[in-house]
Length: 417
Image (tube, rainbow, N blue to C red):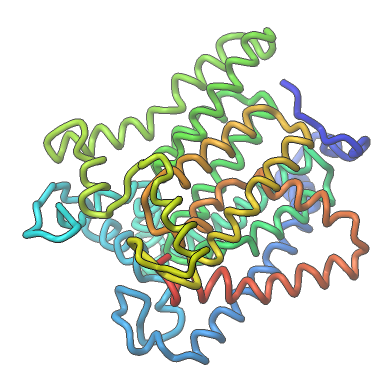
């Protein structure tokens, strides 16, 4: 199927062709030359933002007064293992104990249960902990950091096919400073999911259907928003079949494999709790997270614009950043459509946005929930690639430093990540 090369990127949209490596050493050298610039820039951006984030935590000192489970700890880095990170550590060390336990009253109908958190990330934490001797926190951080670089490489690979290597490198950097990017280097599953999603999209673009199906299957074991990836893969396979490209077996096999991870975990969790709808009942009753066709998003937008925060999960600074991000979405989508990417990338992006904005949730987390929408980085990268190298370095450096506040400190200390 078409890679959807961006107009004006003639001579840049295709990846450089090199001779097939004959040895592992040659393969490693080719891989380093190909991905090195993108990973280097991403790492530099993240280090700057992470340093500012830790400095702000130390400057405020408020983390010392908070419960380690809820944004506190004895050290600044302890903050990265709280909130959802605490739940992931529980799963990694104790496994699941699925149950729907009714509460005495209040807005929560059920007690919170770790089965709400998908198994791939805590499973990797447990494996890494066993192999390295690291505790669950250290193992979780190691998995997240390595996965963040894998995600940067995948975003680079997809963007390079669309707009050339320079845009690919910039898109990897944007991944490191996008609102919500503070969760990339934390005990959170976001980096792992984006890595899987980016590479699944790349495999579709290159006609590697079995790899795309398996990667989407694995992504379904990590986050429920893999539903958007499953839908996008289905659209891509349908187009390939209609155009009679790549045969029949590859696309059909991918479509059959792709949803099994997501559907399998949801079915198992619900079955263990007593009914086929139990997982969704738990999300609604214990986490107040459910699809409401955008009603909650509308309340938040109205509240923030009018200066009110009387909606559920109101966090003024975090919500304001999320609202500003939401206002940029129509512009970014319009610019992405103008670049004429493959249809399945648009489907993946739009379905992810609909799932996020159409649900009641902690609205301030919108910036984190939209991290998987990496195709939106492409028009940003295309615009920034026009800058000279010194100007581009200055923009990315300033953006990286600012991200330590808006994507790190705000997310973890002024709201709930």
